[in-house]
Image (cartoon, rainbow, N blue to C red; front, side):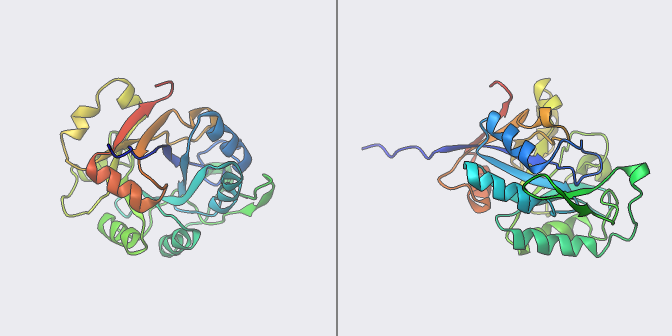
Length: 251
């Protein structure tokens, strides 16, 4: 008898909330989960800039409706490379955040950079993050990747096709000894079928995600993982074995 294929999980692993100063105020926990459900997403990762403080509220709401919410951060490294750090547990993300925060010395000026709102599961404002989340931390790329792995997380280089804040724009190449679990291609590049230009630069597995800063962007890009459980370890294994495929909205 043939072995049954593992179930598929549709994942958008790069979603910002109202904690990110560049995100819309509508990116609240309740609205994010509602939109994720509308897009038939099984897994989402909350990856605000340099912080995981809004992940708990989104995770609690996701649990109520059967959506796995993974806590994460989009780290801005010393070289100003954006790097997704995605974990299974809040304590892992909080430990990564603590490491990142040690190097954030500049305070936010909301009138210039935008508000950084911490919200609860009812979409009520709990407060604001005082540290400027858009600044680079003290960790270099290699140090950040190693720390992510030390904490049991998944390290993915964000939007490598973008002309700023990507590993290719900042370093000019992808070092072979980084140990990245994946690279991310933006939806625009994927839409215009230009992704091969960037994939030819590396053999590292690739995902596509929305990098949503607005509600309408959630689910615009997604990656389907053929896995039995929605965990970080399972997703890393699927990437290594090629048990994934990339989707755009409507596909």
